[in-house]
Length: 398
Image (tube, rainbow, N blue to C red; front, top):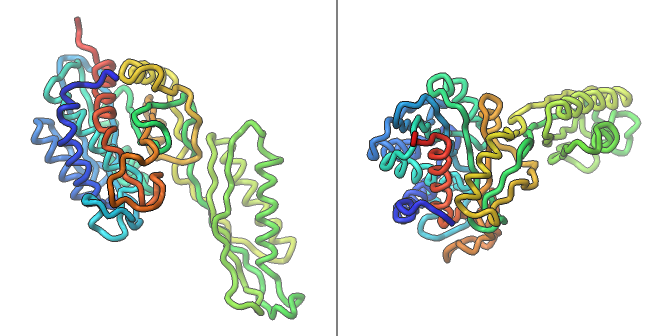
């Protein structure tokens, strides 16, 4: 690896920052302490700061030379509403809140890059450091855009990075085109007619109608969309009834739909609605159908992805770069940024959990698990990648 030597020397301080953030997790749009820490560090290093975009977002501005070119580097800051199972010294001090997705590490890596870029300024142009709130379901990226992120900080491209458990520590991976899926939710209520379970002919059973709808929906996946198009339709909750001898008045189905393209998502939403309404009607029932589109697919731009791959290979070596990683049906609101600006999103391998200290939970070191912890060995790698992205994107005139 060709890591940036001053960042390696700064690793212990980055680790302290990361573990402090881990111990004080904050949920979406509540990241006041986190944004205070970020803003204080940037200010200490002489970096101008703008606060308030996306409510708790922070943007640092590092300028050098005379070029009008600019890039954005983004880190997310929020934690998850879940209980941490780890008991090591930097475990969460707030019950029911945990950095179980590594946003503490993402923030620390970008701060490490900020520290180096501010000191050395080996680039010509502007680097915008985008510390984003509310990635975990709050669409903080969209909120920052609505608050004028790209008007106030005009950038030619924007890049993001997420740790990826299971991939070897410090490996870097990306794929052009769709890399992460859209995230969508549905809420369906079937309104039947309650009756005694011993006299089902006197009612309209919403439970059986829900079963019919659930089975029919899967034919959208297997018989209506092209088998070359990827999609997931998962019913994750069914609620109905309160007694063994009562047919309930209604039943509810809740779940998620994931796709890589808008047309496939349109197909699923429209056909799910039609099947639910007409199936219920065939049995004499009615349906309330709600479909909520949360995050769009994350689609990497080809040119910016190829550029990032070149920087990756120069940093960690071609043998540690996967330029055609398998896309995931997980979602990420960085997708909103990529709808507005060229750029790409990459993964950095977090390992299998061997980095965890004594006192970690018994569960696996995977995202959204109470035993997860970010791998601090990634801090100089991720920070070095951000520095090389900035320097290579905005080269000094020779």
